Amino acid sequence: MHELAICQALIIQVEDIARKHAADVEAIWIGVGPLSGVEPRLIERAYLLVAQGGRASEAQLHIQSLPVRVVCSSCGTHSDVTPNNLVCTACGDWRTTLLCGDELSLLRVQLLAPTSSHSIPRPAHV
Amino acid sequence: MCDSCGCNLTPGNQAMALQPLPASVTAVEVLSGLLNANDLAAQHNRAHLDAHGVLTINLMSSPGAGKTTLLEQTIAALRGHLRIGVIEGDLDTENDAERIRRQGVPAVQITTGSACHLDAHMVHDALHTLHLHELDLLFIENVGNLVCPASFDLGQHCNVVLLSYTEGDDKPAKYPVMFRTADLLLLTKSDLAPYLDDFDPARAKTNLRALANSAPVMTVAARGEQDLNAWLTWLESRLQAHRSYLSLDSLA
Image 1 (cartoon, helix red, strand yellow):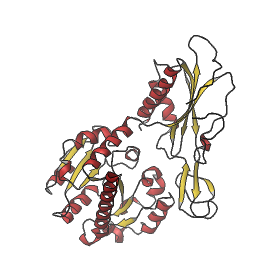
Image 2 (cartoon, one colour):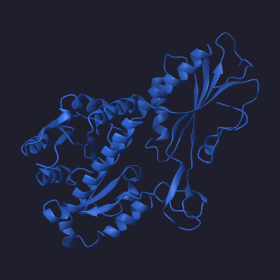
Image 3 (cartoon, chains in turn blue, cyan):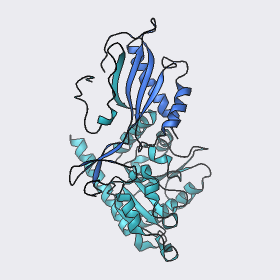
Image 4 (cartoon, one colour):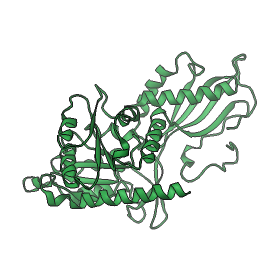
């Protein structure tokens, strides 16, 4: 429901990175978990609207769907589970901690130097 | 942030590790949450509330589960004991704020127009019309909706989710994002139990536990006073815990 606001935040971070490297954006990777409250297909549509006119207007958006993964407080097993059943698959205990699955994160920004048509071979760190 | 040796990867974020790109490509590896403007506004609200020591509770449920009625009964039960304020959220009408004001308690109505949830900016504006130094407890009655309100931090300290007997005991399984946020699950309208033989509070609790949520589950019938005691005890204990936390924090 609030995918547009999410994309606005995404574009701000992405454009900030692009500006620091004086480059345009070729591609963006984000991670969306099933328990994030955000629908990936709606993010795709909202992104098209929000990216227009900026450094990321030609960028390809890749959405990495994340698993729902928990660790059990009883037996320590890591389980991949479904969003409404976070019970340990090994011992059946419901007392688990979510390791992954409710995130909404920016993962990677791939840059393109604006003056050339191919990427510049210089590694960047954040 | 190291982008080659994997030292920033944990079992939690391993799933987000991407395939490395060829050396000819420039890529900035990031691992940051998309903290948007709402979250920042919510943090500001929370700081403001903490400066006044006001415990703030976000009440969420589907429309008609009994949030306003619960507040009316709670206000009557705590009269003379705790000072309460209320922020009401609805698409339209001042009905709920008027009901609260008739109880002699300050209430601000936020009418959202077509927005299906409250957000931190709306709550921020409402906070500034309340005299927070005169309150112990602030309830935010969110828009009736089991979907969107779960995703908007308002600056509250606790989330209380109401599920009425008439809605069915499988709702925690159907709305995992919402029910995972609950610090307390209140099963309301329990006085209708004789007419609803397919609602099992134990099943609702099992469905909540399956979300790895250890929140207490209480049945309440706001139209019967003795059923509120567990809820009132929970409120008092949360308030004491919150005040202890704030006083420790100020010593740090």
